[in-house]
Image 1 (cartoon, rainbow, N blue to C red):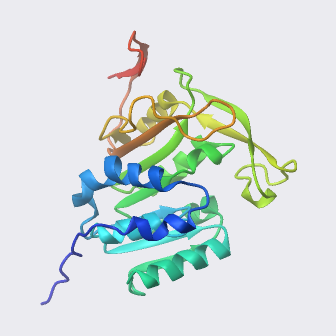
Image 2: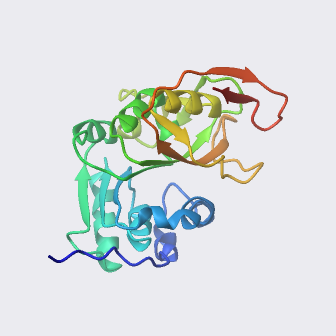
Length: 257
């Protein structure tokens, strides 16, 4: 009997994507890689990965470079997915390593419920939904071993959604209310405490602290722009918990089991 050797880990060529970036910056992409992915590269060895809202393919490429066996890359925009496909081909990805899915990411996640993924990458997406809690529920229902989240979060310390108006270039970009007012969309930016509370209820536990550098902020026209970069591990055991407030100026809501 022959076995397939796990993919060999390598450094991703993130500089390749820099001239093409549309909704991010080379600094941000490099930072997420350095603090959130590179130190945990062993998790990608032989893994099946779901990259939701894959954009032009930089996180799909990163997953493959770190040793992933296969990546399902989802994006709503056909032109963006075409760029991802072309980029990954130029960087040497084989046809059997990536499945490209052109679909609304919420619909795709629900449709892929019976697929097996070891890692789900949710990068720069959660704060563009009017109902990010519902999307977290759908992601958790996939029951992947690991969930990696990069998102803007509210400065509010309570477990809440902060509803704000954000700019959007087209109505199709509106993640919750498709009939957006011209150039505007309603979104719900979650607080860190809300993400913790919901994911623990949905069967996950934090595997790392918030890895975003202290004081780091992301783009937002409304001030709801703290950053969360964090790994979560599947733990289906029921957990009952309460929340208590602390005097910690950084994280003042903690879980008490």
